Length: 302
Ligand SMILES: [Zn+2]
Ligand SMILES: [Zn+2]
Image 1 (cartoon, helix red, strand yellow):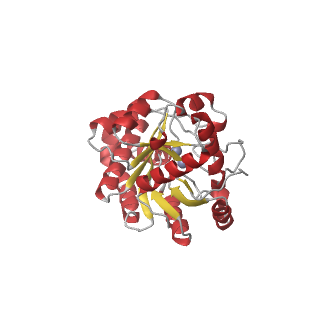
Image 2: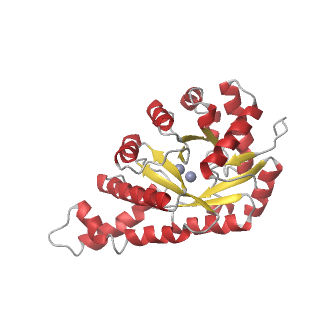
Image 3: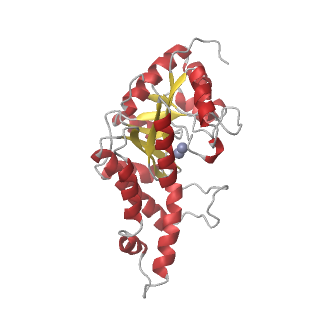
């Protein structure tokens, strides 16, 4: 417990909708509020977790939802698409032709399902969406691998979901893992960029090019509990202006003490690390990051 008087922190990225929190959400939200973390954004990673995010947000004051399909989970659609088309097409289709052919039945349906959730008043953003080239050790997909066709499908989903954010005037939570080039290419070329402080590079990799892009385009940078031990990120965060930072736990992952599950009440610990690294007071970090998060998601103090 930190020795400060908190008024208000916001956890801008917390998966209360994941199985790790089944049956415990009530207590975790209460504990977070006791420690001054009064507002929480819950991002979806597929259709069921997006629906769950809304369900949780509807039950709790100060909790908001984001809806979207995470690039990792596009693998499921990618796999289904390949199997169903490759087995019927002669001669075999090119990858993009496969997606094109499947568009009406598979991926368009997923996008439509996300769109149906957009009008809920507790939905503040599209997220988390993006590009991910990481080879996960732990994944529910036994044959998970990164093929270029898979990344192409991730790009299509990202573009379609950014379009929804524009259409419904919602904010954007971007997930990028080891795919800076791809994601910047889309944000640069597609004309879909969401600027004006309405988008965030969540759990941002310590990278100057990403920071400069965010600066130029008026985007926020999300910082997590790995700031406690990730040396490169510690150095990099010193260069990120406080006016660009939002705090997030990415619970149940990325606990500052490497425990599982991480919980939203750990936000002040992240704030304390940021304050020390930047040589400012924790109150300053609290005040500025809360103001930033409200601007990002267009939420007020209730
Ligand atoms: Zn993420
Ligand atoms: Zn996440």
